[in-house]
Length: 155
Image (cartoon, rainbow, N blue to C red; front, side):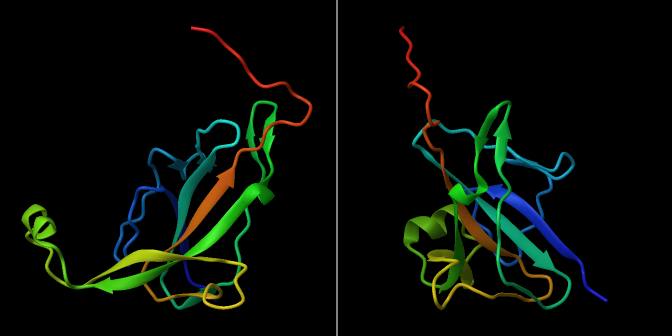
């Protein structure tokens, strides 16, 4: 019998630590609606993170994204690039950091290195430890719609 695997999405500016709480609702994700909400313009890259937590040891062996839709506009899911967030242990904090967060002097695992999921090593599988969160960084390039002229306006 399988265990419970929780999945949620957080903004690109969020740091996902092993003890990060599950966020079923935030500015980019609604678990209740089953939606990811992103905003960007043509030729921009928008990013978010997909976080996972399981109640038992699991292995994430791949990730894909369905097409994103807004009205009649579609951004193909294959426009997404996925990266494993590899954590580095940090235990030497600068003085300014300790002044701002005096309670935090212990070693913490910070996500720092991004490894493309298609890399030959170092990305997959992502081994989930029971009760610990892991995250994957996702970037989506918003393509220029084929056959449509650029938008113009005046102020």
